[in-house]
Length: 212
Image 1 (spheres, rainbow, N blue to C red):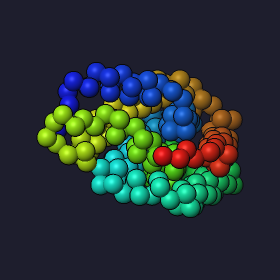
Image 2 (cartoon, rainbow, N blue to C red; image 1 turned 30 degrees about the horizontal axis):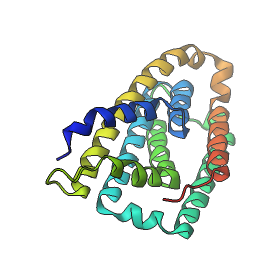
Image 3 (cartoon, rainbow, N blue to C red; image 1 turned 90 degrees about the horizontal axis):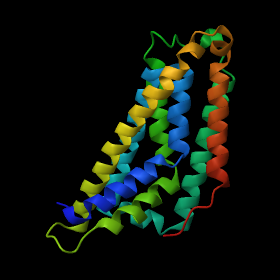
């Protein structure tokens, strides 16, 4: 369903993109460092879930329609920034006694999963990325439609991205083990994540959304 002659070039481009630090990498790495590997894994799957949704929207042509509307992109950017600011504030005001036990509760992992999904879907740059990147590797030389090719290319991108993020979680989570045993860090870990969400919000609100 894709032109395999362009596969080496596509994989090279995907690997290069994965190695470039971005907001997704920051969220997953900081989640793993602050709360351990389990939470980082859930954040990684949240990122992959949003990627699959964006791939489907791109394959169906919905992303292109949204990307051509500057007002829709601006609304997405503002909603995304407001959501990240709210998440940051919720983390900052969380008291250590109110926080779930990181070692035993799955609630925190599911919270980071949802936050990863929503923050990525509300990022107009992520949507435009799929609109601009995937069509470059659609080939007119095969019988599959552009939508089918974009679907396969997008799913391949998401699988590779998930594998990379899980590797990142393993590395950063191992480094964070001593921190999770430090009482002072445990007391302030939610504030640390709150600052990360504030950074992501500023990153999104201050960035210029590219025009397709």
